[in-house]
Length: 285
Image 1 (spheres, one colour):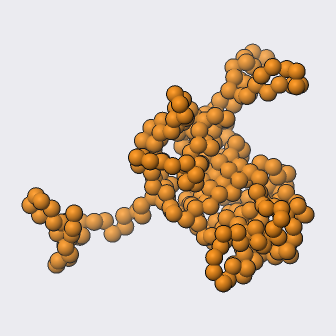
Image 2 (image 1 turned 180 degrees about the vertical axis):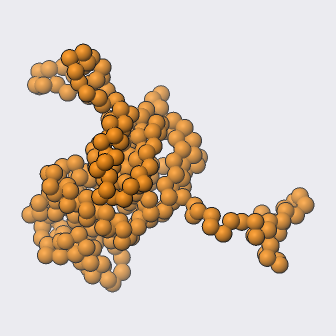
Image 3 (image 1 turned 90 degrees about the horizontal axis):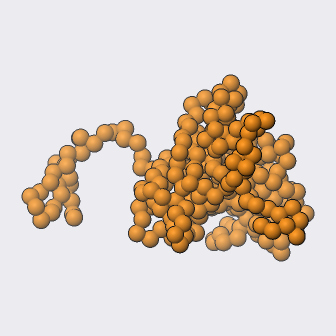
């Protein structure tokens, strides 16, 4: 279909009588289209439906956390948003500019830190861009260090610099703080929020930490059996959520099926979805 703009109007040329669209009828303050859009998305492995009929919108610059039990479909969804798994013949819209920060830093031990950050970049200004990104995360003094000499927090900050140096429209984070100690995690939380406020990518954070999701997010989604079963939008400013965090935490833990264990609790039911890990090599799975 072609369209001609005449006299403040778009006239659509089709085989049927011309359809006229008056641009004065289009709202001036219409919200921008979502950065991420999935409609009726499904993913099957054999006969197993991992995700079924999922609808998802992420707004430009929005910070969203995704909670879910093990096996709920979080990783499958993340791989789709990262473009690692194809979505042929499905209604999936994702930005072409994407970056992922994983639970482990995945730095190449045979490359200096700045070369890890610059990996895949092109142009004459590769090193200055890498150095700028590393200084943004407080690693300007570790540019030429080897990855194995970094602490856990430093390695994750280097991984964050590697993601942000590409100026992604969509930043995906797969439990990136899980291996950090509590104090380092809080510092990295503050760093991530500062960098997000500067670069403003759309962020999807996959986490098992309810308190982390409350502290960082604009919106929290709960995924269960491949469907979004709950959504919580946080209106209180970050840093002022202490009063609501207790009630919201209990509600989110309820969605996740995690409650208080008492003398009457059926422990087999509580741990039914957990993997059966043997206690010794001789124990059967």
